[in-house]
Amino acid sequence: MRLVNRHVIITGGSSGIGLATARQLVIRGASVSLIARNRAGLAEAAELLRPLARKHGQRVEIATADVTRQSDIQQAIGDLINRSGPCDVLITSAGASHPGYFEHLDDAIFREMMEVNYFGTLYAIRAVVPQMIARRLGAVVAISSVAGLIGVFGYTAYAPAKFAVRGLMESLRQEMKPYNITLSIAYPPDTDTPQLAYERQFKPQEATRISGTIKPISAEQMARSIVRGIIKRRFAITADTQSAMLVRLSGVVAPVLNHMFDRSVRQVRREREISEGHSLSS
Ligand SMILES: NC(=O)c1ccc[n+]([C@@H]2O[C@H](COP(=O)([O-])OP(=O)(O)OC[C@H]3O[C@@H](n4cnc5c(N)ncnc54)[C@H](OP(=O)(O)O)[C@@H]3O)[C@@H](O)[C@H]2O)c1
Image 1: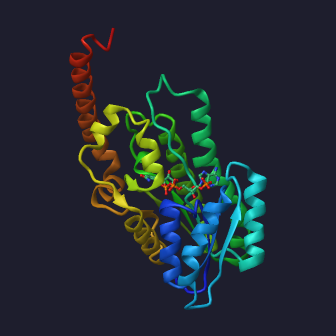
Image 2 (image 1 turned 120 degrees about the horizontal axis):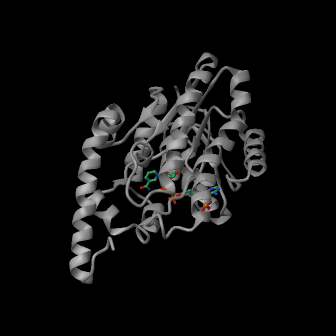
Image 3 (image 1 turned 60 degrees about the vertical axis):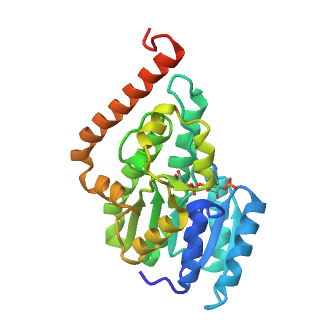
């Protein structure tokens, strides 16, 4: 898909992967509309993008909405379409992660993860699809996670929501194809953003060991892959070799990875038993 003068709406566009993607899109000539809850964060992001948007006279618009409230997100998307024209591309990047030991996580966290990551994605997509069908034109990119491809220790609340996003996109892709609407799903690995910094404070030691020495990628690297994915109409979007392998071979490599993950968990628990002087299984 050509990006010059396209209108791209990005939920979670004020920070991290969403903001980096907005920047790449503006550089390539698209108009962007950013949605998030915090107005100050949105205004700051728009200030960063507007000087880059002069080349093709593009628009940079913002709207506040909580993606977990369907009427809010519908209204915000409606307002942005009135200001900048029909939505050619939707990117659903609004999301949150809260890891922790299953038995320590509050019930509310499980619901919250589903509300923001899954329903937040679903509501935004439902707000743009009727117009895309009528125009026989559009692209939708949902941001899942590597944790939407394989379950990881400590992510019992987050991973199911990202798996759900994958189920939605795989099913919807088939329904949208006859209308010339392209669907994509991005699987970021650990990416250096405020979300990663936030989740680190809750991440169990075992999960840290499983991530090992893998260095987070930059939000810009992920953003460039997302933009390339839109241009080339790719369904699965990845930014590094490990995630690409996981997408291609997930059924085959999952048992191998699970074996490695279990070994890391055993190591951490043995070390904790030695340092704490008691068995963790009793
Ligand atoms: N960073 C990683 O390592 C990583 C890895 C895999 C997948 N991901 C996924 O990538 C996406 C982007 O994450 P990021 O790391 O870029 O996070 P980030 O820097 O924390 O940005 C999150 C964005 O979402 C918005 N947001 C959060 N909750 C919202 C809500 N209820 N309604 C509307 N907007 C909301 C935030 O703005 P407000 O707070 O102002 O609303 C912000 O603009 C997420 O879906 C995340 O799960 C991230």
